[in-house]
Length: 237
Image (cartoon, rainbow, N blue to C red; front, side, top):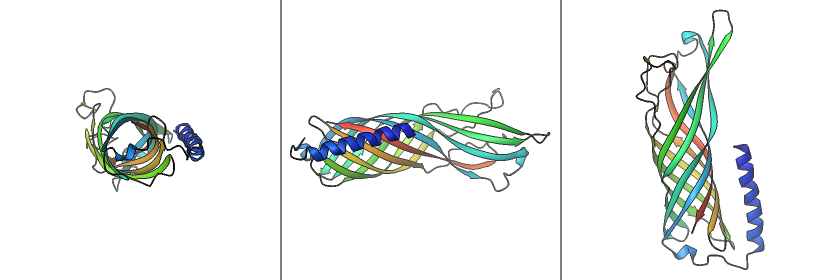
């Protein structure tokens, strides 16, 4: 994820320099006067959880600690934009988000040694975000913008129906539906044949995703809510 962010920042600096040098040539001069635009977005994500522990979780079943381990994934979305005003767009970005997260548990063994166990949680989210984009006026072929909105997501790889009584590997089960608030911002670059953007966004889940079960991994947790940081490049024509 750090390498991905660094690559995007380098691209931003290079394109910003290009936009400043090329101010005299106004690319896509009529772009803002069209009511609809279409494109796609390619993203990298780092996903994890907001964890609320039960008040008496400490030392329950010899449990010492639960650590949230963020991991990297990627997103693929198509983009449809309705533009009621030149600087205000309503964006719909249906697509897929591939997310990997882990919870790391530390248990105290009878010999006073620590037993560390990791529970990976993988999801393939079918996402339906709706975002409002507020953009500054163009400076040549460059503009900055902010984003605010929300999304509904459904986990196509949910293990909510797995029976931990019959499974050899106990899983931490999550509900398959999620609702999130999303906010962020980015930079538009108007190139001769299309608009390119670099975008940074955070996603915060609202409902508790944890399915309560009588296992040593689920019992200490009161709530699990999703969170993700997303870096995207978008192309619009």
